[in-house]
Amino acid sequence: MDFTLTEEQRMIYEYGNRIAERFDHAYWRTYAEKAELPQELFQQLAEDGFLGLMVPEEYGGSGLGMMEMLLLIEGLANNGVPLLNLVVGPTMTMGLLAKHGSEEVKRRFLPPGCRGELKYCFAITEPNAGSNTMEITTYARPDGKGGFLLSGQKVFITDADVADYALVVTRTKPRQEVQKKTDGFTLFMVDLKQKGVSKTLIPIAFPLPETQWQLFFDDVPLSRDDVVGEVDAGFRILFDTLNPERITLAGLCAGIGRFALKRAVEYANERRVFNNTPIGAYQGIQHPLAIAHTEIELASLMARKAAWVFDEVLPAGEYSNMAKYAAAEAAIHAVDHTIQCFGGNGFTKEYGVYDLYGLVRLLRTAPINREMILNYLAEHVLGLPRSY
Image (tube, rainbow, N blue to C red; front, side):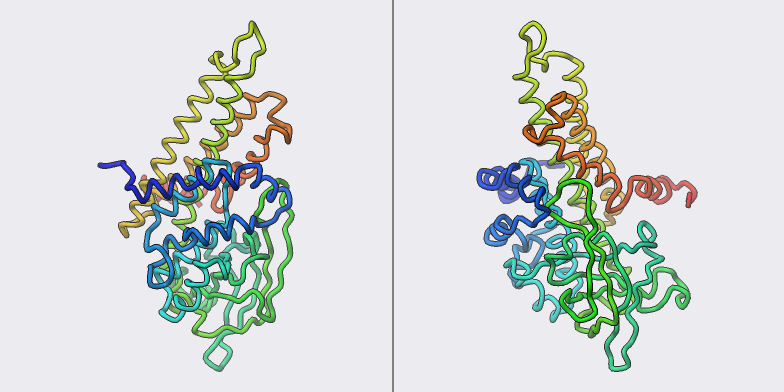
């Protein structure tokens, strides 16, 4: 095994260090408090060629893979700049289009996506179908002219307000009409400015640049040119977007954890309370931070293994789920121990560490909660009986 990054991979990973000189954590916090996409940073990423990392060169991308996207997102988060937008757009949507879109779909969506001219979001969750995708009811019925009419509702859709198109998971055959529950799914690229699309903001209790939305579809017209993959066979390719989501979020969590621990170490080396001794000399401070550091590095390694497996076109579910579980838990521990290290200062805006807690705590629950991950690992990896 060789854990050494290539020169290109190392430069991608360290890009976060360089860009943070201009777009740092304070910049991120400003946009998080406004709940607004940092457009200037997004455009800089486009100009530097990072939105199309997973897109072949003939469509304006870099022709790289999951590993490179993981390194980019983790490297930014290492510097306190966690960007969920890079997960839902360039990773989940553009990555899937690059692998499974028709030639027409690729030409239509990938070059402008790489340039940052079009933005994308991903829509699968519904009010009554969160962890259980089989129960989605959003339905694209035939319009009698070779196309479809889309109706239904999606919820907790990240950045639906700034996205031009959504990659929407639908049924084109109701569940009661299929023999296998995974049949009858179709993925569509839906123009969010199309007649029949409406959206409602879901207020979130902590600051983030990315916003959450409910989407409503009322007989939205679609054509076969809007299909990604095959009609009624969308479930076969669905995990080529869900596994990358888990891998990149694991990297984002690892980066946030590192950023928090760096702040904790700096503070613990400076803060003196008793006998003019830095609080970092006390094992009550040292041991939790050392444990959190170990957990973060273990999770980061699992994320890289999952990315490597995905790029090798091997089954990635086991490693993607373990990476997401481990990284979310590690990030929560790292941020929590950091807040504790800062004492009362950890709860102030001035020191800016508490604002990270809401995000890492969210990522224990979303986009898939840790209980469902553990169910998957118990059943599909350990071979235990199905529990639900």
